Image (cartoon, rainbow, N blue to C red; front, side, top):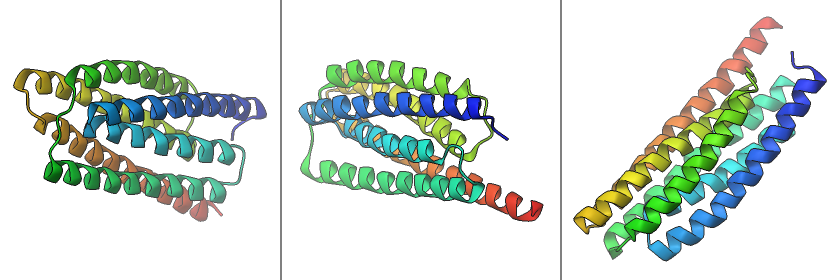
Length: 199
């Protein structure tokens, strides 16, 4: 059972990571558009969905478990929807052709990795078993892994002078999002089942 002090700290952390992810969404979105990069745009959309999830999680702090599991379920579904959007963008860029800018991809990946690492550490320090805090940790971990993929893809785009590494990382980011979304949904279902059995 969380204390009022713990819940207050959780709210503060979730608001901070929300602000950081909202800023990343804007930065990555502009950079992805200018660099014509599916990987960066995928990461931008990921951070947009993360921002919404952190707000949902913020609202769930201190609420009854049924509210928390519903909020976590909404987070998982949102992540799966995001993955579908990324897959459509990769398909569009594959058909239309792209010429991503490798240096921009690499620079933004480093910036995003630093910000996501900070978010991940802030959330992990809460040491909470709360289903929504676990969802927030899953999102930050997914983002951090995605940033490493974009960094590698940017280097390959520069080296090979081809766009396929960017498209491949876009697909991988979508796959990571699907995995994370399914894990969140599974955790939410398990939490709800455990609560029902304890009643």
